[in-house]
Length: 74
View 1: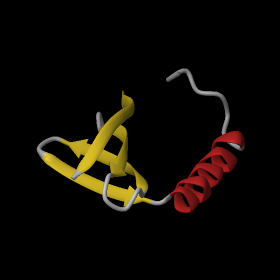
View 2: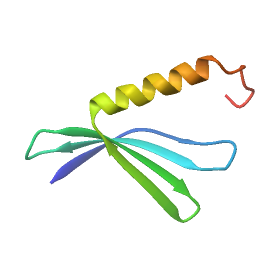
View 3: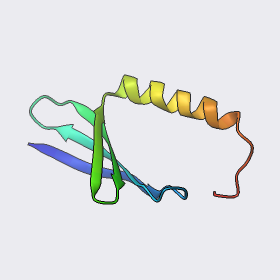
View 4: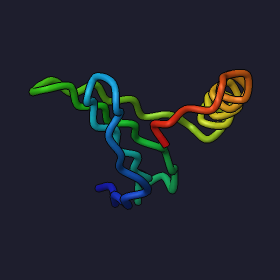
């Protein structure tokens, strides 16, 4: 059995994808993963990632965002 905790939910301005971040705690093994759910229309893409991968992904996204001009989509 796993417990799900909502972390964040937002909509991408271009493309209208809905992104939801959840923490998934597996009771038996004590392992926590971050679930990334991307909804595009009726289709879902779901990634369950470990903390190390989440950190690498976040750092890569922050590094890229820092090189981009400020957007009015905030």
